[in-house]
Length: 338
Image (cartoon, rainbow, N blue to C red):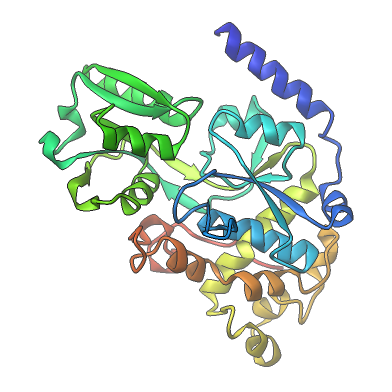
């Protein structure tokens, strides 16, 4: 193990020791604000708008948790974090939850002592190049310079894949998605690699997106989702089940527009439990009975969030794919609310 990696792990463990026993629900309520670690600028997923307000697919999870716990989806402070700073910020308690296109891996779960509470986007790593580079496959990138974010699974996957295919590359280290996009446009690297969703987001903001192609190879599994610290299981439950409330709402046809009507008319026992009409599930987590109903009403169900931020009718243009409901051949599946 490299000394820097060993020291970094010790630093995270030390930081974690001081916050592991925290009651985050109580802290968030007392503060009157959720502190959410997010991407400094990944269009469609997390980025400030013209007024400096964060919007996006990942941001919606932060908003939903704030609605569930505090009653108001706007009661969120967003802390922009890079690939290298995100986990230290979470471990130290600087943020309550990390929702920043972060991949669930064995070492992050066990060694860094985090809990990935759900997968809000099933992704995989890909490559984007300028069309005039003349390549149609990542296997044609032998000897290429490749922009890669440091401190990420992307960096490790890249090394593994090129080694497995017996081809060489020169890494060009970058700090974030915005820098990767700039460097590719400027010609500082032949290709930019990150999660395929991130490539689509980057291409959508380019002045000439038609001149860039995303190569067909997907070289990894990247289950992305909200992350909390080990040691506060109740807080993990709050974030997990708030997310699943949004997934279940889509399955049952509950939207931000019709949630009140459905709550007052449904005879479905599962929906009644979900919306707090026939049970007080929130009491098990220190919340009131309408926590899920508020999250759905203020933020929308999973499908609404997907369509509004990254779906096929947006500049990002992502199909649901693996992120479709399980009833539609995808992997999004909410456990029972009972």
